[in-house]
Structures are given as structure tokens and as C-alpha cells.
Amino acid sequence: MHVLASRDREELRDRWRVGVTVGAALLADVDLAFRFVDGRNHHSAESHGIGFALLTAVAGGLVFRLLGWRHAFVLGLAAGLAYATHPLLDYLNVDTNPPIGIMALWPFSPAYYKFPWPIFMDIGRTLTWTTVLHNAVAGAWEATLLLPLLWAAWRWRSRRLGGPAWREGSRASR
Ligand SMILES: [Zn+2]
Image 1: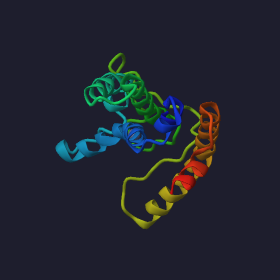
Image 2: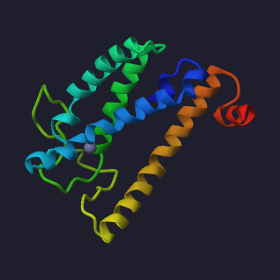
Image 3: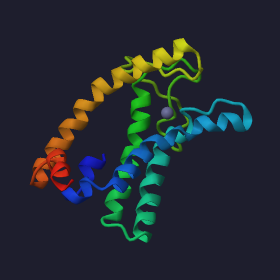
């Protein structure tokens, strides 16, 4: 999302903007921490709904505006969309933790949704060697599918914005 939202090469290479979008994409999983509060499993519930993605976009836009960042609302929108990619990816993976699926449309609907033909593997939440190994394989599989997309977006964006791509650019400046 960050790559597609950048309006020029300076923004494309801005580490803060990268951080904000990546952070927003991970934000939905703070619900994993709520388990320690009341002992129940909150993962994939309200925080994985469209409502929080919208909230992230609006709140993000306002905060970046207050901070005086360039194109604050475009970045807010990118953060909101990045937030939404998280439930989307969770929707596409294997879920073995009931309730199965995610509350994708919360607060509009409390129903859980699950893609019938999962693309990604599930991520284990226990700390055993089998789980660690399983998660490593799952992560590698996800990277195999997603990195080409990132690379393509980056190439496309760099070409559209003109000038050399990130790699040549950063090498020249160092
Ligand atoms: Zn999640």
C-alpha cells in the first residue's frame, strides 16, 4: 500500500511512511494480547473488521495532518488500506482456532467469514519446535506469494515516478 500511495520518489523512500503502513498492517493483531486480559481468545474478532480499517484511515489522516506531514490524508488512506490487507490475508489462510474465520464486516455484521479454499497456511500460537518449524514454512510460503507482488508494485511505481529505482538511487547517495 505504501508503494502505491507514494506521490514521488522521496515519499517512496521515506522510512516513516514505510513504517506507518507496515505498522498499520500489523495493528489488527493487537487483539492477540487481549487474551492475557480476560483469558479469552479475541483474535480475528472486532479488530479484523472493516470498521477499524476506516478508523485507522481517518485517525491516521488527522494525526499526520497535525504532525504536518505531506499528503497526510493520502498516507492515512494508505494506512487504512494496509490495515484492511491484514484481515484479507487472515481471511485467505487456514484457521484451526475457533471461532473459525474473521469478523470482516464488523461493526456492520458480527458474522465470521472464511474463504472456503485457503491459500495460506495457519500460524501456530504455541512455542514448540513443531510449531516454530511449521510457522517458518508458512512464512516462507507467504513470502513466495507476496514478495513478487511487492517487487512488481515497486518497479511499476518507480518507473511511473521517473528516475532510477530504489536500489540504484540509494547506492548512488551512499
Ligand atoms: Zn490477524
